[in-house]
Image 1 (tube, rainbow, N blue to C red):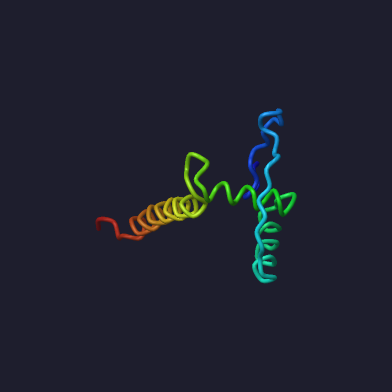
Image 2 (image 1 turned 90 degrees about the vertical axis):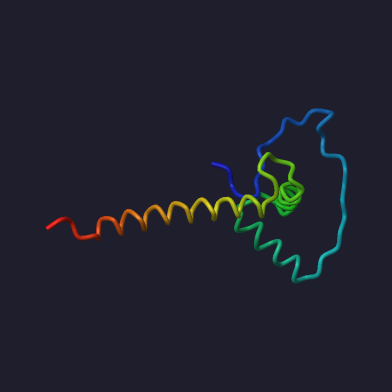
Length: 97
């Protein structure tokens, strides 16, 4: 099971070592939001979560950005809900007398 915000672990080879740093500043409110999202996603560290979300937002995976993935998930659930409502409505229709 993959936790939200967690990327599969890559083997750490000399070529894939994480040796680059990006620094940016946040307000306290932004930092608190980020920490809460990290905790809700079940990520091990704030750094791991932030890196994962940033790379997802850049479309580094086959499905594109995180928002696009969320949209597709919602769209899929709406399709399932529509089919369920249709089945319920069909069962509630009176049969031939």
